[in-house]
Image 1 (tube, helix red, strand yellow):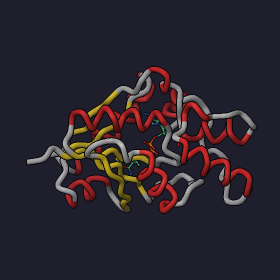
Image 2 (spheres, helix red, strand yellow; image 1 turned 180 degrees about the vertical axis):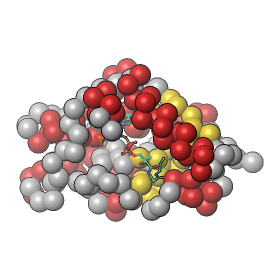
Image 3 (tube, helix red, strand yellow; image 1 turned 120 degrees about the vertical axis):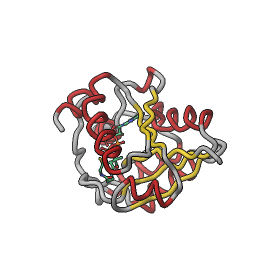
Image 4 (cartoon, protein in one colour; image 1 turned 135 degrees about the vertical axis):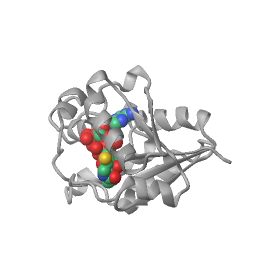
Length: 180
Ligand code: COA
């Protein structure tokens, strides 16, 4: 039986922090599905189609990784994919509160599943998609934190100034998670 893991999130946009987690997961699991949640309460900057495309390009050199999107409950998606493992990245202890709640709820809904927490490289500890969008919007270069395609797409989005959502939570990862 191939070991399948689902790495779910908003990925709006995907950052090098996420890519770091996908690489780590691909060393442990045979197949890693990067699953874009399509029913997030966040106002998205990038459409699901844009996110699918940017992730497809960003992960094409990672063996066993591919990208998909889903609507509805994550646990239902797991069942459809015959997967029992959800990967979540933990950047700081403060992420744990929210992650613990989510993992517990998912386990209530689907007792056979497990959540596996992985720690990204320390360079990405304070990274979040909202923060990247904020610094880019204010003129800084987030090049070290984004795959090249994503950077290009973000610049295009910014220059069009169309549909560019204000960051939902531009605070640090810690305060963001605490405020949920
Ligand atoms: N590197 C960089 N940033 C990271 C990161 C990493 N390794 N890990 C997390 N982040 C950031 C994300 O960029 C995101 O930043 P943002 O808030 O600025 O956009 C933030 O941490 C939250 O991460 P994300 O994984 O996108 O969480 P989320 O809360 O947006 O999404 C879902 C969580 C989509 C997995 C969850 O809501 C879900 O499963 N939804 C489906 C419906 C469902 O089943 N609900 C019940 C769940 S109990």
